[in-house]
Length: 372
Image 1: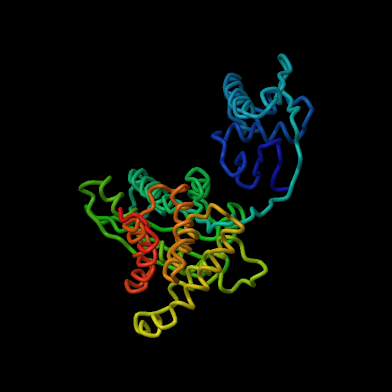
Image 2 (image 1 turned 120 degrees about the vertical axis):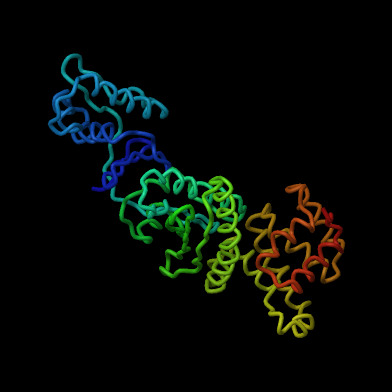
């Protein structure tokens, strides 16, 4: 038994962590130890002495300390229907747990349809414990920057930080958090300069799909954090895109999700190199037709997938079907009124060759997409 289900909560016995869904509940170690002692004998009185022994391991403490931990547990469970009554007080004797208790085996979380990523706590290798706040702040800024990518599912910071100062295997993280990619790193310091390294790992294969380092001065910590976070997000986005496209291309057509279909559409729209541009232009009509078909399939499964809509607008307009392209653009603008050619250039410029980007922009302009 590695987990215990307590209604909507789950107690991870291996990590001494109470979760609701995938989010950790803010409880201290003492409260978790008290809870473990209570649920070992559900519905049965557990004396105050036994609870204090379980949580403080023989230390002499005031009974009021136990009262504080019981109150913390009741606050946590009180967020669930009827949860505020799960811990009963037995006057002058102790407490008993009367809530639902179901022992389970640790289960792997299913991967979400969108590509998923967690930014794990970076290792503080500065030799200065007081720099911990800087390292944690760096991770938080990177997480926030990456979470702005609309096509990516990013695990919340609180869930990621349950792995702080703990040995872990990336496959274990993938199973426990339901992620496809892990970003990990470290921070080193020399005098007034720091070096931040990072590596992006595909948890399915264990392969490193990106790694880099960033150097900077500690003159302005917040500015340095912003710069590194922006650089990391900008660097890993095209790598993630390419990895996802390769993954989708290997899947059989019968098992493709809406997002996979969009990726195949995207692949068809820029499956050319600059070296082969002349041939690319000659075959562009066929490629854009295939792109429109894949985008259409993606939209059948997920009608509000804006990225697929945008690609379909470009493909249809390039193929000369301006009426349908404009109709599709109208539906896209209803979902995202801020869509513009300038915005698409800024977004797609990270991973499209300039010549191929211009082919798509030509289609969007023909369909009447706003410039700004």
